[in-house]
Image (cartoon, rainbow, N blue to C red; front, side):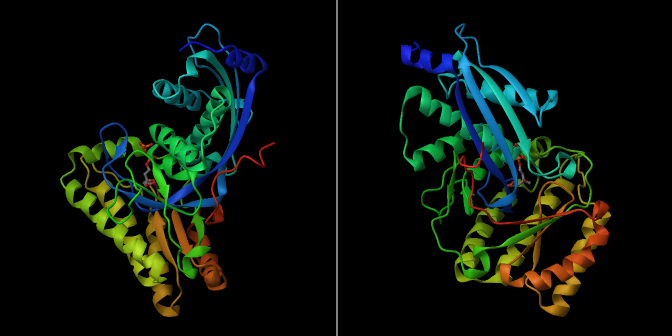
Length: 359
Ligand code: DP6
């Protein structure tokens, strides 16, 4: 690639951008890959509001063309493990973003939630970075992408950093992976679902009950690899396709009971895959099960519209419609005893990334 003079001028001055991007919670789980960072089954999630990453990037000229050179800080400090992940990610992106060799990037990142909280941060972090990189590309090449092209490209790039991150570039409910019920769906990028959810699901809430904040024994990446040789893999991938159809229908038809049973089936199936991998492992903790049992019991007694899901860890995401908040909060008060240090995060469905409030 030859640098245009405009490109050089822009970079000599420095091109800056900043994005805030949320974490998401999967209802239909991505667990298993094919090809190059493509999903073995489609997944469906919604964006959160309170759990997000803010990433600021400044790109300056690196005339040597051996970049990208990177200076990275997390919450104001150098962070070697994160820096290595980002360098690896940027190397992956060289074939996708022609300008990368010609820049030195100063990247500053931070999370809204404590890093030790045990919440997966790769989705918010990688999606925020992907959005900044596409934004810089637009400025440097002076191209104007329409919104759909911009977010699809950001989603495609984010996927290469972390699969679940490709769903975080949108607000609301999102699908990643080809599915017969979602015409525009793709394995390469996520798409927002084009539908109106029933009123129970429009403003759905998610209280994250922090059972254990220790680093995970087995990373998602390593766990996903075990699906390559898993004896139940084929059945699991088919189950996800069927569950996604059922879940989408329940969202449209405002059917809480089906939504709850499919969501919990997905959470338990995910952990069943981990337990029956070779080697098998257990990420749930005794208090994860105490919470599940307590929810089951109270839900039967009081007919509360709540259900739970888990990601690849011991923490419980308690989901409930906005109108059920009062009853859910009573239940949550009872569940506090099972949380590490009584810690929980009250979150809800969100409207996706933004770069307005990023000063
Ligand atoms: C259980 O997206 O973290 O949260 O692509 O290897 O980075 P990599 O995996 P990652 O896996 C997330 C798994 C999950 C389910 C989900 O979010 O769909």
